[in-house]
Image 1 (tube, rainbow over the protein chains, first blue to last red):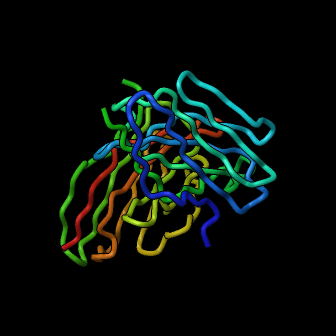
Image 2: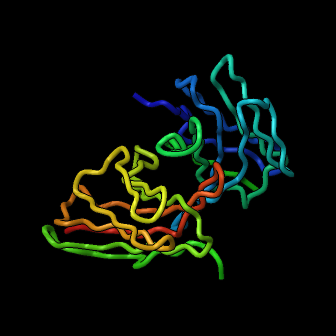
Image 3: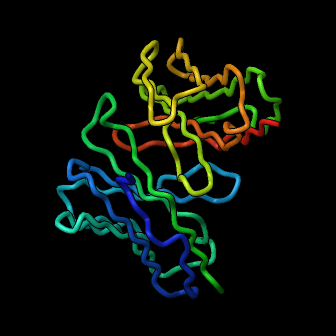
Length: 115
Length: 110
């Protein structure tokens, strides 16, 4: 069973508008969440993260929101740009050290930003 | 330049052959990881290493062997390649709670 789920395989947004990518998790022990962006033929690139003690983290155009009671997090990109077109992976981990630091990834959402 | 590199970037091999994928990082991070990415599965952990000479299995370790004699290197070996191991392989290292990935190796087993 998937512990981290990204239920939308794809998302299409107009340039300049907001992109909202969603992620749900089932393991209540997860305490750290990350978003990665991946372009074709490249490795995933770390984008932004959030600890479970926070409900929001912002970095430029990117904001991650965490709703622990709903076991849900989302990534907002405002404004969206064509260069944001990529596959976005949500990941989670519990604790740190040993196997606890291992990341569990969702299957990804392909974002297309149209000019 | 500092970072994480993988070699080769592309590899075609035959069923039954041994293949080694190389991973090198210049940050001296303690933790390193190997993942495979397949359509419909996202990234799945094969093996990880907490330090030199300390390795452990991930979610999909069968058919793979790892070693880590030096902090900076973490090779992944397919002892007898099978078609099901056709995939894109990513190596990563971790700083605190964030993992940083290499560019990947696309492996095709014929």
